[in-house]
Image 1 (cartoon, helix red, strand yellow):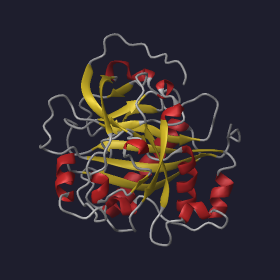
Image 2 (cartoon, one colour; image 1 turned 135 degrees about the vertical axis):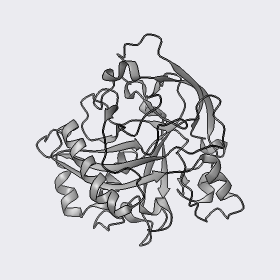
Image 3 (tube, helix red, strand yellow; image 1 turned 90 degrees about the vertical axis):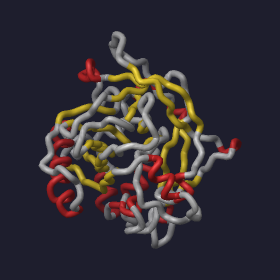
Image 4 (tube, one colour; image 1 turned 180 degrees about the horizontal axis):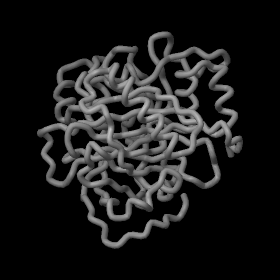
Length: 321
């Protein structure tokens, strides 16, 4: 864990509850099934924290220093209802945005996810359903995590690219970066909190296996493809139906410092790292979670947002470590 160098003077704060990993000895899970009723009923450990509004010092938060960055981006896509429109209009925007911000030579969009429902909506949808049934109402992820562990990043790469191409592209620096953007209206509930990488102790990561549903089975069925790779049996041990890979959940640590941007608009976006292969002291990931604002009711008009997951390659940077 590196020493933070954020300069701040009485930033506005939101008192809230963040939900952390429940250890197996206390009844926690090491296998999860995203998009199912069981996942909506999964237990976590609540901790009361202060999340600080970084708007007044936003220039101090960058992908390489903190693992995340708030940017301005006006998209031509507005309602995110048409899948073909999203892939033909928004995906190219995201690719160019990341290339410009990072100097990457190649960006490959993996998938996207739109969220239009509250946590209460999705829990209600799960009521009475067997654990294995899928929940179709997609809510903000309200637990502290990184979408893939460092090993899981390699797993999902080989699940979504031909083996020969993945072998070639991992000989130089590569990573995974997400773009998260509200649409339709400003964020007035369930904003995204991100943890300054320099306050993260990687000993607090907890590896969990995510077993995705089959393609087309709810939102999570479209998160990843399921390419087969010779000699890479671990990347497709869920069989022919669906992908599985490691994700990183998080144990609580009082040194973790979380930030958010108050009242984000549809003309703003977060860029944040899921993985970076380069090990030279820069941020390698961004631990994150949605969180309820103070006095936010469980029921109400849902936050609307889109999240795009991208493989990012620096083919001219052969220093992986």
